[in-house]
Each structure stands twice: as structure tokens, then as C-alpha cells.
Image 1 (tube, rainbow, N blue to C red):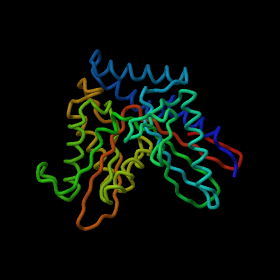
Image 2: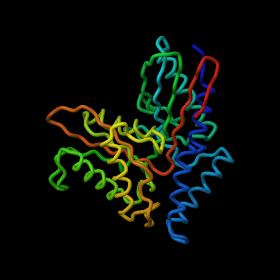
Image 3: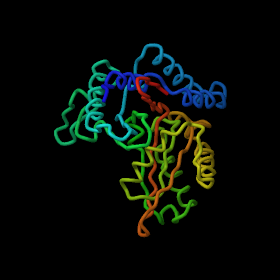
Length: 290
């Protein structure tokens, strides 16, 4: 098994400093639709200037470089232990190169490790064995501000009048956006998982954020609800950074999971405008970055 540490460092660098083209394009479209001279248009203009400067100088898009979350799909026979070691070594080197800010703080002692390594939750790494001989590594940098405004609901919710159906899901997702206001660094992207248990639901709500901005749910009902939630969230008037305007949410991504009859969870993972996620594909000696 080859050593991919250097390639993983490059993946982290690109994720931290070079916003994905589909996210940038969506931000540009949002700026174009805001009123000329408005605070919303100005905020989006500043965001886009920052995106270009970060790309040009290879510096982090945001000072909060977030929790690194890896989803690794590997061929049969690959050692997940060695892959984990290489990912953790890449995180240390990327931190030394200032592509990442030291973020791993021990919850008990309050001590920062200084190298972005903690227990098995920092960085977070998920493995899945797949058919074929390709290695696919997806990484997301999830900032603390947007993570703080994520939410999980248990339906029915009498306070919101939300039942155990898609109409109820709509109500709680809009409630999460309303409560977030500008604190999640809007405009945001919503990752929503319906069902599962508490843990698997939050897991899926983050995983769905890897979809491209224009990628819809394969379920027609969820695809329609994605569009509706984005449109209705944008009618709340919260706007970029909470300054007001037409763009509070850039996109909504949804997925459904099987659940116990007794439980009906809806998990909302809020991603800030700096939607930093990238993919690396290894095919033999070839390495492709997307």
C-alpha cells in the first residue's frame, strides 16, 4: 500500500484555501440577485473577494479552519489503520504549513494539542469498503460557528405544530434557520437527515453536504422539499451574515433513513458560506483532485 501523506496534505490545502467552483458560482449568483448597493450585496462581494485572495495566496478561506471530517471509500484489502495514520500525519503537516489552524482542544483539560490531533473524533474519519480499485477520499472542514447552530428535533413537536410527516419536517427545518439568524455565517447550506437514531441521523446530515450544489435528492418528494425549503428560508429576510436580504440559504440537501417506530428524528447540519469540501481519487499511480 503506497504512502499518500503528501497527496493528502495537498487535498487539505485545496480544501482550506480554494473554494469549490460550484460553491463560488452559487455565491456569485446570490450577489447578482441582491439589491444594488445593499448591505447584502456588499457582504457577498466581500466574501467573494476573500475567496479570490485565499486562492491566490494559498491561505485559509476562513480563520476558523474547522473540524476536518473525512469520508474514505477504499478497495478491499487496504489497511484502514495505515490510511488513518497517513491522514493524521497529513493533518499535522497541514497545520504546520498553516493551511489549518490548531483547533483540537481537550474538552476536559481545555488544552490545545497544537497539531489538530485529538482522540478518534479529531479529525473525524469514516471508512467504507467499496468495489473496484479506486480510493476515494472526501474531506470537509466544518467550522465551529455553523456547527453551533445545527439542530436535532424529535417529532411530533407540539410547540411548532410539527407532526411526523414531511410537513412537520419543513416546519422544524425553517425553525432551525430562523433560530440561527446570522450566527452560522449565512448564507448557508442545509444538510437534513430524516429518521435514523440520534447518531446516524447527524452523521447522514453531514454526509449529504458532499453533494454538488445543483445535485438534487433522487427521491422526488425530497427534491421538491429541498427547493421549497431553500425558497422559504430566503423569504425570512435574514440575509448574508444576518444583514438582511434575499439570500439566507444557498441550497438544501436532504436524505431519509429508516427509523424505529417510536422515534422520528430530524437533524439539521448547517454549513456556512465557506462550504469547504473536496475530493481526491487515486487510480493506480494517478491522483485526481476534484
